[in-house]
Image (cartoon, rainbow, N blue to C red; front, side, top):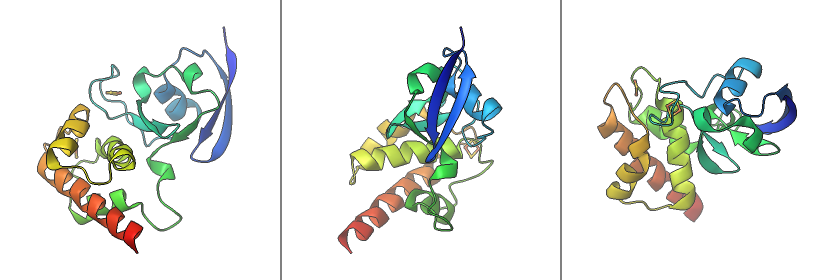
Length: 160
Ligand code: FES
Ligand code: FES
C-alpha cells in the first residue's frame, strides 16, 4: 500500500506518495529527478548509489524509501556550497581521480562519510572504508590520493 513519505533531499523537503518498499535510489532518480546517485549492481555490492542518510553512508539501491522518511538525504548535488566545491569534490578534480565518472558520486559521498568519522585516516583505513565502492575504470590509486588530499585540506581548514 502506498504511503506519504517525506525526504529532506539536499536541504529541500520533498514529499512522495509511493510504495515504502521501493528503493530510495529509484525514488530519487525517477520520482524526484535527483540523478547523482547511480544504478550499478542494484544489490548493495558496488557503491555507485551511495548517499548520506542522516549523515551516515547508505546504499540507496537497497534502502527502502520508507526507512528514509523524515531523514536528511545528501547526494552529490548537495555537497557544494554555491560555487564552492566541497573539499572532497575539489580533491577528486585536483588529483584527476575521475575517468568515466560513473562511480564518482558514490566514491565522493563515501569519502565524505569517512572524513566525518575519521579526519586522519591511514591509507589502510581509507582502502578498507572505500572497499565497497567499485571503480570499473580502475582509478583506485588516484582515488586514494584524492581522499588523502581531502583529509589534509580539511585538517588545514579546521586549523585555520
Ligand atoms: S547500485 Fe547500489 S550498491 Fe550497486
Ligand atoms: S571513473 Fe569510471 S567507474 Fe570509476
